Amino acid sequence: MFFLKMLYIYGGNKEQVKLSRQLFHFCNESLFSKKGKPTIDLSIKKVEDALAWTDYEGDGKFFIEIEESLDRRKFIITLCHEMIHVRQFLAGVDVSEFSAYYYEERLANQFYDEELANNFEENILDINED
Image (cartoon, rainbow, N blue to C red):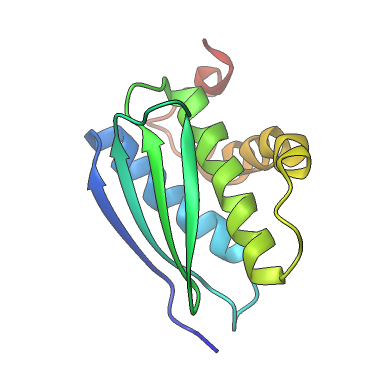
């Protein structure tokens, strides 16, 4: 059983690093049990043939790569998608793209409403911009 929640970020710009930390904290509170918090190595870089991918390494440890060129809205939604896969792995259920696509925008909107909307530096309309 694993209890620590850790995020290691490699690459990305300041905004992506900040968003990644905020989203990781949010997901730890809303998606994972106290005893099931993941450790994630997140690499923000050029990703071939995908927007992102997740690899479960065992014992609550994950490696995620996410495309560095994504705009803010797509970055949040894509990282939410990958965090849903982390939840699926930890819950021991089949990893489902259908389910991840179904919940990714709901989770992103919840993240925005609960985390980013209260930050005066953020613009409430930013998540809806393309």
